[in-house]
Structures are given as structure tokens and as C-alpha cells.
Length: 280
Length: 209
Image (cartoon, rainbow over all chains, first blue to last red; front, side, top):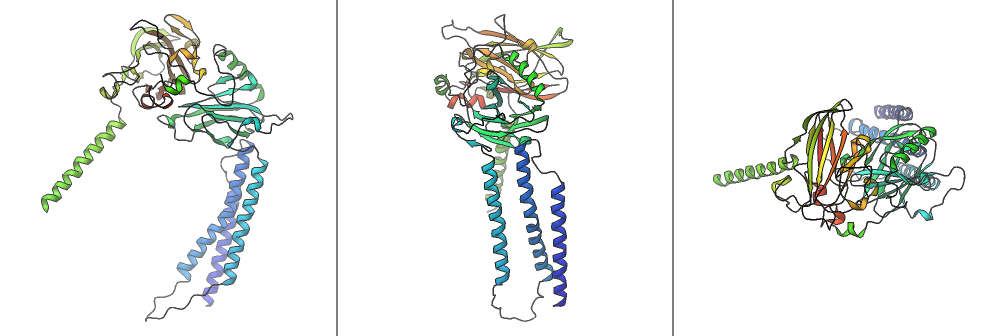
């Protein structure tokens, strides 16, 4: 019995050390998707929080498993014995249920509050006209993402509705992505910014994020969408300084000049023509 | 009993061979890859190579699948192209299909070609009225996109539009997909099925190097 008590102490000490070391390592290590935007930072924080809570629980399960299999096992009976009735351990059960309730309810409250603060958050499908539009100087830059088998293009309604094949954003500027599709369902995934939302035909999916780090990033489609789905990606999305963004917009405006008179008026969704619906 | 066993083994082997044949055929497109024709000219200090493709409303017995889908729209003779690294590709496309119209008008813009221009029946252009397009020749990863005007419905029989443009391929070898962005697959939902989803018709690969 004394050896058993010693083994329990050792297992508990090992668990505490592993739990603390793991949580410290998680706090020091990189957590996806990173810190390239306010949204990404928020997601990283949630992932870190969940991991910090989950790791001690997971290591406790492993410690209990080890204790049960190695320390607490009974030697095979030498003669046939009658099974003893099992009785519950009220204290252990109460502790387990209360701890689980506290953890789950705390996370539920935290998640609900985080979602409420982030409005409009990732991938809220809505009619844009009903969205609360900020009226302050912090008004977001609207950028439309148009998915089509198999390419993303982008429109900038604040700059005459020009359309581009490359996504370039100014740093530290709140961006309101309006995501739609011209055919099947796609998904716009700007991993580094923590933005991932479905692109659905005749729907306007709104996501807001503020890029906080300049750089070149990858965008890809994350909804299986046909033959070239795997190639519906772009490694040239950029977050640049506001002056570089202004220069880029000017260049794109010049490049777009020949097509501007043909572009459809800016809209949050685009109806296909009857000719395209019924085939040629 | 023993003969039954061997019949079963033979059946499994035959089924395996058939499945293997189907998978191999699926993974390896049947149309041959064509290499660009070399020319003696240079542009921007780079060698110029050329292709001559034709777009047709129905491939018939030519092209991908050896007549498997004769009524499908397609590029001929193939959509698998090979060019040397660092070359300038001079592309001539004899466009024989009718006008469908672009789903995204932006793709009516000529992009990624030399001077961002093409010629349509000898006339230099930077953009095409999207409603007149029959197809596009677009290589997204190279930023190349050229709209191809369709033959008007009142044009004489055997009429075609000739589109020419030049674009530069990278100096390093690579494999680039290219495709048409006009939903031109008649008879399929939103024009996006069949030949739009099958290599060898309205989609292909450009091998550089």
C-alpha cells in the first residue's frame, strides 16, 4: 500500500511537470495562423487558450492510463475468485464533473463574447446592405473577392471598381472582404490573415480583418471545386505600405483602362446572363 | 474445386489489369504533347517559338479521346504544349467557334502578353468586348490571358477569327496549367461541365523547359 502511495505521488509530480512544461512550450512556440492580422492574432489566441487547457487534461489522462496499466494492475489470481461489487467514488466523480463543466462553460462564454466582439466575423453570409457600416475614420476598405473556376480576381469599389488578378492590401487598414462566386462554391482562404470564407454564387460573404504585417502571402481555394481546384492558388498576395498600395492602385487603373467600359457595375453579387445559364 | 480457384484467380487478374488500364489511361492524357516550332527570329533577346492552335465547336474524331466526345468544344490539335525555357511564344489561334460571352468581363482584357496586346485579324487590340468572346487562352500562374473573339452568327460558313499574341515563358523549367475562362460547354450546367472539366478540350498544360 505504501509503494502504491509513493507511485501515485511520483505519477502526480511527473504529470504536473509535464503539464507545466507543455504549457510553457505552447506559450513560447508559434501558434497558427500567426500574427499577420488582428483576426489571425485573435484566432491564434483562441487556439493557444484551448491548447493550454487541453494539454494538462490530455497529460492527466496519459498519467492515469500509465498508473492504471503499470502500477495499479493486479497479479493474475491463483485461484478462481468471485468478482467484487464496484462502487462509485463520489468525490472523484464530483470533481471530474465539476471540473469539466467549469472548463467547457468558461470556453463557451469566452467564445460567445469573442464572436460578439468580432462582428462581422469570418464568413458571415448576409446581405451587405444590412451590415452595420462603421462611420468613423476607421471605415474599412472594401475589397471584393470573385471566385470562378479556377481563379480568384479582386475588385476595389473605392477605386473606380477596378478589377485585378492579384490581391494587394495596405497594411494597418481594416479590410472588409466581400466574397462571392460566379459558378460553383469555392472557398477563399487567406491563411496568414486568418480569413477563410465560402464563395457562393449569388451570395455575398463578408469578412473583416486588418493586416498588420507587410509581406507576400499565399491564397488558395479550400473547397473542392473541379478539375483545377488544386491549382486555384496564388503565392503573390501582398500586404504593402499605404504609399506602395497607392502606387499599385495607380498602375492597375492604367492597366484596366481598356476594359473598364465593359466591366459590370460594381455589385456584391453578379447574375449570369440568360445566355450563360442555358448554354450556347 | 481447384479449377474454380484458378478461374477466380484469372478473373481477379483480368479485373486488376482492366482497372490498372483505366487508371493509367485516366492519369495519362492520351493526346500527344506538341513542341513549339522554332523560328529564326528573336524578340527582346529571346528566341521566338510558335504554336498554331484551332478552337472548334466540336472536336469530332480529332483531339483528346480519339472521338470519345465528338460533340465537345475543344482546342486542336492538343492542349499539351511544350516550349523551351526563356523563350517568347508566338501563338496563333484560328478561332472557329461562335460567341458565348465571358462570365467575368474582366477577362476581356489582354494581359501578360508582350505590350499587353494581341492582334485580331491583324488589328492590334488591348481588350475585347466580353460579349463577343468565344474562349480565352489563359495561363493564370503566368498572368497571361487573351480573349478570343467568336465567329458572329451571321458570318459565312467556315469563317474564323485569327488571333495572334506573344508571351514570355520563365527562364526556369516548370509546368503551368492553362484553360478557357468562357463557360463554353454547351448543354452542361452553367456551361462549366464536360470539356471545361476535362484535360485536352478546354484545359491543358504548358511545359516549360
